[in-house]
Amino acid sequence: MSPKIGLVICSQRNPRVGPQIADFVHETITQAFPTTDLSLIDLAVWNLPLCNEPGIPSQIKSPDQYTHSHTQAWSREIAAHDAFIFVTPQYNWGYPASVKNALDYLYHEWTGKPALIVSYGGHGGGKAAAQLRQVLQGLRMTPVERMVLLAFPDRDVLMKGAEGGDLGLTGEGTFWAREKEDITAAFGELQRVINNV
Amino acid sequence: MSPKIGLVICSQRNPRVGPQIADFVHETITQAFPTTDLSLIDLAVWNLPLCNEPGIPSQIKSPDQYTHSHTQAWSREIAAHDAFIFVTPQYNWGYPASVKNALDYLYHEWTGKPALIVSYGGHGGGKAAAQLRQVLQGLRMTPVERMVLLAFPDRDVLMKGAEGGDLGLTGEGTFWAREKEDITAAFGELQRVINNV
Image (tube, rainbow over all chains, first blue to last red; front, top):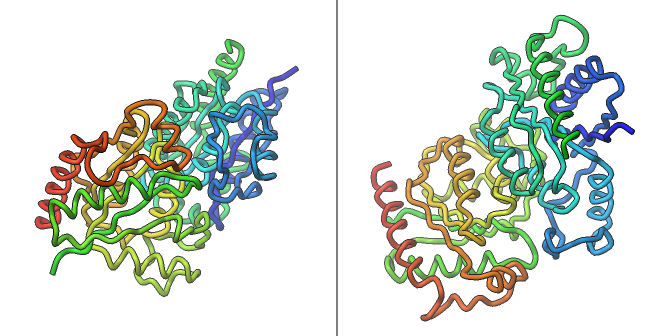
């Protein structure tokens, strides 16, 4: 059976460009690897409150030890996946609060699982990606070394993205044609890590 | 007039040890610098939702351009302070979502202002402090170079802190006696930065 991979949309802003970019990543991967079992995990749909669990996640071994039903559901969702791709914007040189909040809710559900980071921003979001990679290591995940940085080609596109406008990423002729190769290569690396875990 | 300095309690967990540690920092500073104008900003009291402003903070120049009243109030609070001390825990090698969320709500209210980071954790929270310092630079703040790391002396104290128990930090004889000197020295550096801005 194919490993079940969760494609996490880390942005929760409204408007936002995160779903468009996640779809672009999804389409790129399934074109190159048609049998991949890739499912979207949209943090805006989960809309978890700022963590309100009284317990310490690393001390909790079973979902029924969580106090809140939203935490139990989130625990089951993450436990059901074998690996993750985080599609994250960069805000002020760091990761968004939304993805850190979602990560910090749990612990054992994440540990040992491979992960790939795809970041986007004016310069590709490399600072957010590096910080997020460190957090995944703190959670004892196995992030692949290679990361994908999607840089907006100019300020107009950056602002259009920030306003949730259509960036024309589907189909041929996107400005990220070369980045499609990066995504494919990085996903190949994720698959190798998955096979070695 | 003394500069108005906000002492930000970055943790929002419940239970939490953040207020005890902020009180320890507050007491240490006011003992050494009695005329300091230091006021608590408790993120748990503010309890901002995950950022739900439609606008891009860096494009907003006036508080009345924010959509939500909680953002307008938060903008006025931050605009009213000249400098900040962030008292932050480390979660999974990074900063808590709560402080990143509070920072990302605004932009011009933060820029140019000096800041000091005091972190705490099993090993002092240095990874979270370094990540947070990068975010403050992303916001064009002026973080002082020196940071204060408060390490819990052993696992029992760490767990007691995580459960919000009394760490006995007030008065004499605390296990962080040497760290009081660190806080005083770092605050002196913050004052020098404030005087040079």
